[in-house]
Length: 206
Image (cartoon, rainbow, N blue to C red; front, side, top):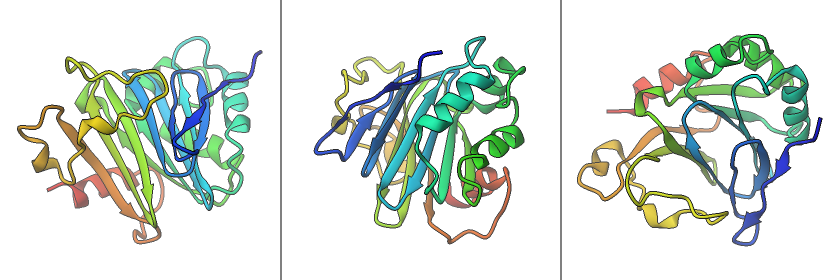
């Protein structure tokens, strides 16, 4: 089995666009284009973001998952954000170790046993581009519809032109509606387990 492809970072290593079957690293920003049935994984370490864009279906078996997790080089990550259409993805890989939220948690902890793992479900938003951005101690997870005309991610260039809003309400009337899914200050939430995303979404979205 070939290892995952490596996404090339840009902007002096600060940005990376991670497409299907790729892993990548950046110091501060990652974009995952056209997430409709895939899962994205972002590990946060002291030096940046360790990222993977995992496809669903028959190719995603345990060997493939182990290869992706190894390629993440994420042993020093303290936090992981798993973002995508969770129910669709897990049902499409029912025979693998990624077939439930709890199974994904166990698998990630084989490479980073002390990490805190958070899940965000993008299913209500349809096919989306996913953005994970780190600024100091804050991590933002945002999405924009990948079906909006003109909203394409070009090659490996991070899409700065989207004009991502700072709150969900400010997306109204903008050219590209972007939903702010989550803004967590590291270590500020005392929740545990797979329900963190539900609690975080309820507390942060107004």
